[in-house]
Image (cartoon, rainbow, N blue to C red; front, side):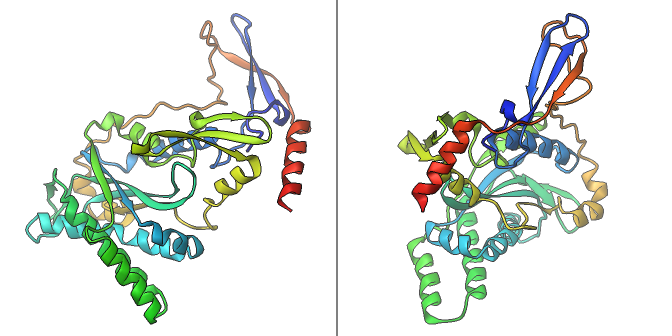
Length: 338
């Protein structure tokens, strides 16, 4: 990942067939954790789900968990899966309350994040929720208003009840759960203010805010082969600069790699496969006109930036040995950690 777009990893020489201008394109690492490749993968993912999302308004909600649960979930990823499974129940519970007791099934695309701005383990869920849903009669019901206070308390109740049921039944765990109820009387914080009304911008919104790498490339200020320096934005506290040894940085980054087969994205409610078949008639009323500009690097339609002429691959250079300074800094870091 550190050698992404490095000449030592190979590159391709393109030449314009009209004006003769030559361009060198370095190969990428294709790692999801890489800031550059992760962004491209996010855009590709957003483009793939364009046939799932409806063109109705969506609410962007972030369901958070208190710091007391982070280390518990880091050591037992099963608890994260349990929290993931409660998102639909929570939203439907609140929607039912707002619709005078009548059940409404919304569409939810939920994405798990385990990282904060400083890359510490911080479990939270980014969700795009339809502003409305389908009632038992098969009709669409608009719900522009979200009952935020109720959403927080319902989220807390479902999470703590599920975690309590999964933990060993003893006095210590009962005290732990009861304390979380007592210390958070208003429930667990849910950020739910942004509404995306323009379907044309919906996928761009997803790519930028909902599914992105642990650290954006724009936040990395420098890397000298030994130290990584990046910006951390802590909201009201403003920006601060953090410097880490490259091995410490990689350890912080790799802790967010999920276990094999672990789901990071779920489509719930109307967006689940079974529901899309069941409510196909109603869903088809929403014409899907979402569009995302493709940003493919290696395609046969690559054009010259000077004259817009067709570019042709002239030569492919294979990988060579990594730069010596990276090997030396990595070795030195390993010696210090022993």
